[in-house]
Amino acid sequence: MTNADTPFPAPGGGGQTGGVHPLIDVPSLDRLLGEPPAPVLLDVRWSLTGPPGAEAYRRGHLPGAVFVDLDRDVAGEPGAGGRHPLPDPDAFAGVMRRAGLTEARSVVVYDEADSTAAARLWWTLRYFGHERVRVLDGGYRAWHDAGRPVTTDEPAPASGDFTPRPGGLPLLDADGAAALARDGVLLDARAPERFRGETEPVDPVAGHVPGAVNAPTQGNVGVDGRFLPPDVLRERFAAFGATDAEEVGAYCGSGVTAAHEVLALTVAGVPAALYVGSWSDWITDPSRPVATG
Image (tube, rainbow, N blue to C red; front, side):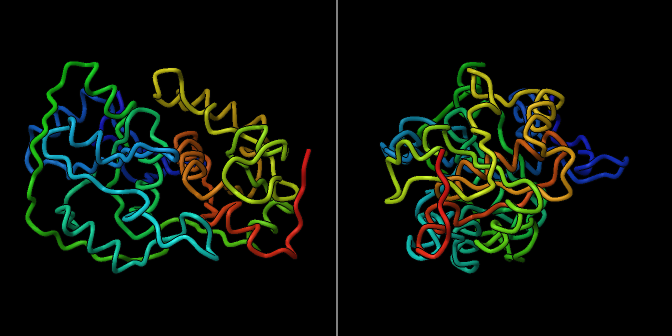
């Protein structure tokens, strides 16, 4: 059981406390919701190809959950910084305050099942300084399949007081990603065929950052969408050289699935930076090299 109150070992071990565990399971969340103050619940169901997550939210969601749109609320406007760059801090804080987020209350975020979108919201909240953030392991599907209640009622929470403090988690830009691919371990979280440059369904250029290692994020979870156990994840990342590296980073197409990779690395006890702009930012500068194969 991933109890929300259990101290989480700091990445890298050493017996230090690194804050609350980044994952929470259904029984633990069910218990927390009955103990005031209940955590803020954020529904961030999303798909790259649609339909919009708001439609799923309106059909049913966890009681008290507020919908957050990944494209509109958790990312800035697409452009030179990629398809899902960092949101403006004040704009992001405004969305979170309207959702009822306060400095004192914990937060639980979820998506449909595999935590891809939830991980990006987890990372963004942590980056902007909120430390008590957890991802519901298995998402809405796990909650629903466990027979827990769902609703179509949309809450109207009291305004929160969340204030953004950028820098809570390590961040990479293109130069940093290039350096890490050369001197550390830079993981590419995309599917193997996209990494190799055999196909590119979204971005105008195919390939990968030279020196990056392909570690598809689908390998972080089981068929039910839940994360693999920490020791299994650590063994997986050891095969990519990440557990012995002094510095580790992750990127993908636009910084969404790479946030999932960072979350999985965190569960495995490996600290990692996120290249938010990812491949969609890398290719905006034609002078940056592109590798294939």
